Image (cartoon, rainbow, N blue to C red; front, top):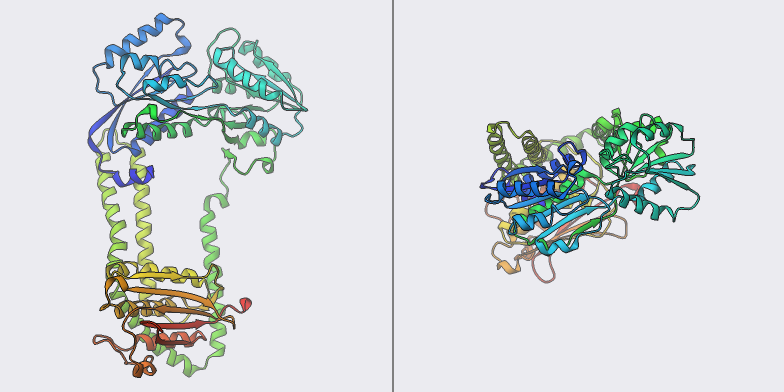
Length: 605
């Protein structure tokens, strides 16, 4: 729903900009915060109808040691932004929620606050009354341990390496609690070594052991680090695989884990911020606490540790796997095979048909097909409004997106991410228009019968879609009544479409003089006792004069002043060529009903 709203507004940004102040607990070089910020900004810009100005400030918590430093940062924010017209404060805290609660409440009490954080700290429900809401992503300890045992079922020892900060100890506490319920595996906890000592000891671990890297913000000596940084320093040295619970560490040499994905969290926080900026009060939106992570592994690490791809769960994201020919061109290969198989089936059908038919019958049929082509062209003239709508919508979207792209190209520097998104929309609208044109080309092309197995239900839905605009314009209630499953039939898709179009349009025209509320056209299908499929088109018009019923399918007979008298005659020729029957009669209550039958594919008799 949010994406649909954003696409409808793209290219028409409100000139009144929105100002968002982004506060970070950590510095600019923290990988998780960088990924979350980028995803947050992209999502909010995509959804917002206003231009958004982002302002960011960093507290550098790892280098702030006392309350005096925090007060200096608070005073700095107050002097710089108190008189600014802020629309939202977005906070990415580490473990302490002061940046999301007390600080904004003191400096900007009227500005709504949204936060997003990956940690195991206590949920700060009490700050919601200050006009704050947010999303907290927990580390998925149970999921990661389960992934370890699935990928390496011979594991009998897990060495847990964690940092020594208060936040690190909370994550270790959750691991200890979860480990108590896991039988058959011994856990060791290394939290009292500085990082240089850890780099030495990870080289000495024996087979059957794995390493679980927990949250790591400070080592035993008090030196500040980030978890991805520690993973990058330990992975090349470790004698056993390393698993993590933070997504930003995947790619540093670790195997992976059921991780907290910073990009996903950033997008979700962008969606939440969009709702709050739209007028929803933060205190009315419950804080989200997500405990389930995203399974993610590094394909290169799997190969390094000889872990079979077959053990990877089906819902797991595999990063850094090289593209194969099948992976790069899967759709093209499948399409090519489908074309080859279709062409083969068509050729076989044509050869069999050629053997069964005499030269004279072929000549007669060809003459009738010329008339069928003329009738199709005439029928399409009645669908002009549908064609204008189906082509006008994508072409109009292409024009609007092109104008939007020109605007973004004038920016210095240009917003390449937004331009790339606009180009993707243009490609989709172009493909949609191409499909409409291809369908019209097929209907207009002069061609002979090409019999093959068809899904009759799908064919009926296609024809109903073609007539949708005409049905609406004539204010007709069209009812499509089909059984759950119809057997496939042998037929020519285009010619059967022509028969259905002719019967449907005839039914609509027959109700032109009927009151609008009584205009009902019913299309149905059923399987007869002999296995043939019968299709019915029933209207609520004035019916057929009884003395004209026998003449319905004669060439040049018509009850319409402007009619050519060829539609039903051509329809009979087409149905006869398919080995079926067609007839028409007056309905018992009102109007007329036309029915035709088609034989199923032999295997479904």
